[in-house]
Each structure stands twice: as C-alpha cells, then as structure tokens.
Length: 163
Image (cartoon, rainbow, N blue to C red; front, top):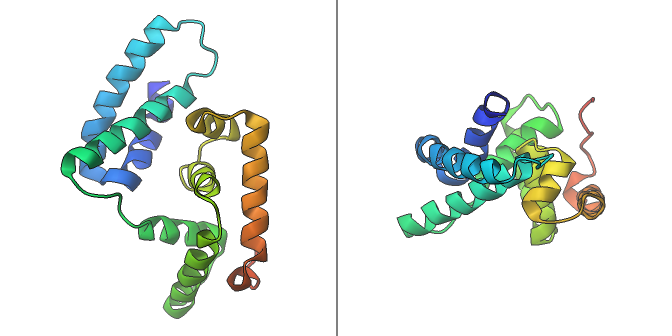
C-alpha cells in the first residue's frame, strides 16, 4: 500500500500546499492512516480514507499558515497538458484561458471530482471515497462535468487525448 501510494500522495498534497510541505505532511498522513487501518483490519478499500485524511491535513496546514488556498493555475496547466498536445506557447495560453472559463462553469463538487479523478489520478472508487459519495453518484457527477466542459464555448476546438 505504501509503495503504491507514496509518490501519488505527495503529488496530491503538493498541488494543495507545495512540494516541501507535502513531504512533511505526508508523513503525518501515513501515521494517522496506519493508526486508523490497524483499527479497521477488514477494510477492503482503504485508499479513499488515505486521501480523506490527506485532504484534512492539507486544509489544516493551510489554516496554520494563515492563507487561503492558491489559485489553481498549476492545475490548469497540468490539465491542459493532459487534454491535448499543443506545441506553441500562444496556443497553450489560449488553452489555459479556455480551460479556466470552462472550469468556472462547473459546480464546486464537479470541480473537486474532476480534480481528484483527472488531475490527481484517483480511480472513480477512490474519488467517491474521498468525496464521501457512492460510486454511481461520482460517475454521474464526472459525466455531467465532462458534458459541461464539452459544451463550454471555448472548448469546442479541442480534441480528447488518445486513450
């Protein structure tokens, strides 16, 4: 479990609190997670709880620092790299602006689901666990978010990446 999720957890935290703080906070998350898991030995899918704990610790760190969460510019850049392959700088800037506009049309819950699933790389089941939702509800939210993004005026000229 640790070897599978260690780097992914740090990336998850780094997007919220920065890479240096993420390494420190990830250790706290692992300690809290393994304490919880020891008390829940029959838990079949503990990954969702790992990311729930991580999200809480990231919020705690932000509050301790006395600042608000950063604007998701880096997230938009990451997403733009995953959505399509654009070579020119001008085109990348236009794509980021289009993405920002399109993501602004999503509800907070849809943005969170898209972030967890597509940017952080969590499975639908893990995304559901982090958001405290059922899997079918999470699938519905992701589907609606994708439909909204596809209908957004600025996103009409982009193709989905090959899978």
